[in-house]
Image (cartoon, rainbow, N blue to C red; front, side):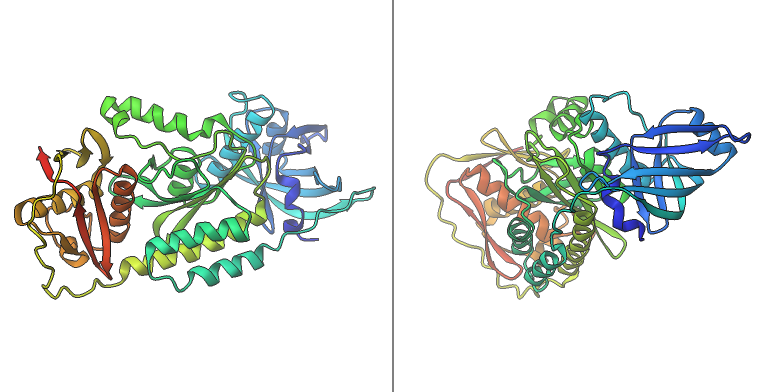
Length: 440
C-alpha cells in the first residue's frame, strides 16, 4: 500500500494516535492534532510542547502511528522513525496554517501553538482489519486540469488569460470563488489583478508578503491549505491591522481584498517560473474540507502552467515603436474638470478626492496625464512607456502589461470619466470625458 493512498486520513478530522516508548520500554500513547503528508516515504507531526511523547522520541526515535479515514472509517497503522524537527520553512508554515484552522474548528484558537514540524520516515504501512464504509466517488481532477490547460495554453493576452483561468475553475472544477494576484518585488507585496465570485472585484487590493494564507504561500513558495476557518488567517482583519499600523494614509489607500465573509476552506498556490515568483492563485469555499490533497496537487500543476504563460508574456518583446503615435485631438473636453491629485512619495493618485491607484501603476497614470495635458497626446505605446524615466518600473522585465491592466480596471471601476482603451498589440489610448486638472 502506498502512503499517498491514505492522505485523506491526514486532514485533521479524526485525530491520530501515536505510541512511543522510553528507553526502559515504558509505553506512552498520545493524540495528535495534525499529521502532514510529506512524500511517499515521510510524514510530519506537530510538535506543540515538550511532553512525555517528545522526551521518548528524543531518547528512542521509533514510534507507531494509528490514523483513521474520516469517510470509510478504515484504520491504518504506520511504523515510524523520528528524523528531525523543522522550525521554519515551507513545511513548517504549511503545518502552522493548517493547525490554526484545526484549532479554530475545535474552539482551541490561541491554545494550539506549533513549535516545530517533526519529520518521520515511514518504514511500514498496513490496514487494520475491520468493517469499513464505501469510499466516495473520486472526482476526475486530471480531466478538469487537461481541459483548463487547453483553454489557457495558447493565450497571448494577460487579461484574457486570467479571465479564462478563473472561468475554467468555476466551470471545470466547481470552484466559484477565486482570485489571481501578481507579485510586486520592490514593494514585497501582491496585488489583485483578477477575481471571480465576489460582490466586489477588489482589483488593486494588496497583501504583504508573509501575511495570511496568500502571503505565506508567496513567501515560502509552497501551497498553503486550510480546511477549517481560522481567524488567525482572516484577511480583512490582517489588512486593516497592517494599514492602521502604518497610519491614516494607508487606510485611505487600502482597497478591500475580495473574500467570503465565512470562508471555511482556503488554498493558496504560488505561481513560480524560471525560479521567480510570479504571483499566487487563490481559491476558497464556504464549506469545510472543500479542498483536499488531490485538489492541491492539481492546482499546483495549473499554477505552474499559468506562471509559465505569464512569464512568457512578460518576456515577449514589445511591438516596435514606429513613431506614428499621433498627438491626438487638442479639442478641450466639455464639463467640469476632473481633479487629479498626485502624491509623489508613493505615487498615489486621487480623482476628485477619491483614491484610484498607487505605486508603479500610479506613476504610469501620471506620465499619461502629463503628456495629455502638455501636448494633447492620447495615443501611447508600451515600448515608449517602458523606456520613460518618469515611470518607476523596477526593471525592464517588470510586467508592464499587468500594471496597465490594473490601471485600466481601476479606472473602469471608479467610473470617474477617464479610461484606457486598447487599440492594438502594445498600444492603447487615454480617453478623458472631461478636462483634467492636475493638482500636485
